[in-house]
Length: 75
Length: 169
Image (cartoon, rainbow over all chains, first blue to last red; front, side, top):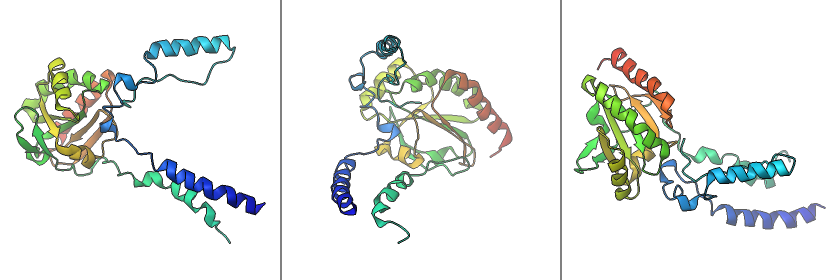
């Protein structure tokens, strides 16, 4: 059993180090590009909220999803 | 063995947030930023305003709450500039034209400067947009305010006015 775990752990560590090195933190003052309307997850925040609200009511359980706007990250 | 070495990389991940630069807090000395005015490109330093209460506001054209804060900052400037309050709006737009378009829409009567190479934002380790730092007459940070909501205007103004009466240069 320990042998099996080793086979799994090493490729996972390598994969993680490759994937996570692509991440970078964007400083709060550098989010101008992220704040552009075309970067938003949905074109209309209000419409997306209403849609998810509707969906929740039809599913007879509220959905956990949330619909955000752009990526400005402003306070 | 007491510590499983294979877990070390995961343990190190837990310390990742420590790599971030610590944000400036109250009673820290304000960094002496090299800035230049947005219109005339005239160089100025934050230390030029020693002896005055300095309200440093970091803003950008893409930031919604920044636009909301401008009428308040204009009013603050109008009321308290004569009593020794200097408001400095530090623009952090990557394209200068964006800042000009914003200022045409939301005119500012206080000092607007650009941050050369965004060094000032790095020195302050700005945590949010907009961020405001109220700096006292001795160049010490007296108050840090993140974001801006219309309801917070009175509170901020009271803080500045209190600083004018309590600390003498």
